[in-house]
Image (cartoon, rainbow, N blue to C red; front, side, top):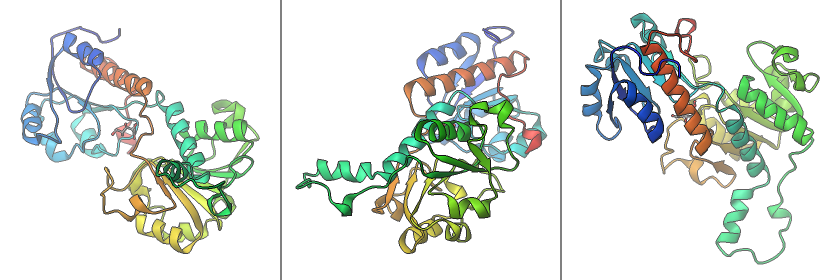
Length: 332
Ligand code: 8YV
């Protein structure tokens, strides 16, 4: 495979769990130190001194940590999102940042659509009713859910994952798809199956029309706290909010207000401003919130594919080659 076992072994630090076969690929080519920064930050920081390559996920890499890694050439994230990385600092230091786009699109779209369905049909709440032995009679109006098919879905963010969700909605459930993005997507070239089925719509028009508002936004200075009281107030009475992107794009106090005082009927959340979600968070116990523990890409197949791509990216850069999936830190 490209970049495998060429040139002098380099020092690679792993800062997240890798499947054994992918760790073996790394160890076959380089000198690997496996760390767990959450459990032992000191050992992680000590290992940085020699590191030429860093690979992992779910841990914020700060400029201060980069200062402890003077030999670092590449950071390979086992994620598509790059909000754990200091893009400008990496760019300044000429350190390549790699990520794992594409390999998780369909899995995340499944999760988000499943969460939308579970939230609208109250599946978790009603499964708990059965589990807790409270199913005493046929469900009545007080336990009815709301239809998903043939409703209007409004997507905030329309990249690969947003388009994968739109396919499920339009082609599988007869839904009208509205989407909001920085610029319209050329569906004819990027998603021909969605031509005539997905409409680029200004936010002020999308929010009052959508029965389901689905946020698939990356976290950046532009999107942080974007979903605030003003936006929630514009949403359709009785609509349902789904977040499958990043928790910090949402003002969670404003979300709670929209759930308790309208217009939201319910919310399905796979991501939160603080993860794991603090047990004291009112979102954890809110009766009309379906919470998930950030499982967007969490299938055996997809997490393995993400790890494999992350290892390939790292091996390519350490071999002096172009990575399969480098993130453009200059554009940040
Ligand atoms: C990752 C994700 O597993 O890829 C992403 O951006 O959110 C998930 O697939 C998670 O970021 C790991 O921290």
